[in-house]
Amino acid sequence: MKVKTLAINGLIAALYFALAMLIKPLAYGPIQYRLPEIFNHLVVFNKKYAIGIALGVLIANLFSPLGIYELFFGLPQTIIALATTIFCGRFVKNKMTLMIINMLVFTFTMFMIAWEIHIFYKAPFWESWLFCAVGELVVMGIGIPVMLFLNKRLHFGKAF
Image (cartoon, one colour):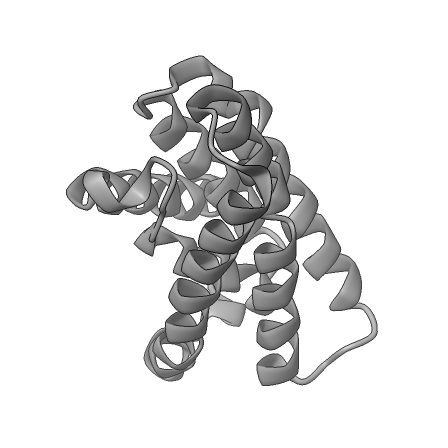
C-alpha cells in the first residue's frame, strides 16, 4: 500500500472516530444517529476509502457501551454494506445513483445492529431495526449533498 493511501485512510479513520466521540450520546444505543456514517459515501468515489471507513468504525466501536461486542455486529455490517456498494459500482457509474444505493444498502443492513440491540438491550427487534434504519437513512441522506458538495472542492476520486 502506498504511503499516501495509508495516510488518507488513517485520516478518514481518525475523523470517523473523532466525530463519533463528539456526538457519543447520539452515536450509540438503541436509537442511533451516527453522523460519521456520511463517510460511507466515500467508497462511491474510490473503493480504497473502505479501509479508512472500516478502521474508523472498528476504533469507534471499541468505545461503545457494548465494547468488544460491537466488533461482531457493527464492523461486519459496515464491511458487508461497503462491499455491496463497491460491487454495485461496477455496474452503476452515476455517482448520485450509487450514493442512493449506498444509503439504501446501509439502511437495510442495519438489521445487524438491530439484532445486537435486541440481544444486549432486550429491545424488540423490529422496533430496533426501524429506529436504526431511520437513523441511518437520515444521516446518509443528509450526507449525499454534503459529500457531493465536498467532492467538488476536494475531488475524492483523485485523492489516490
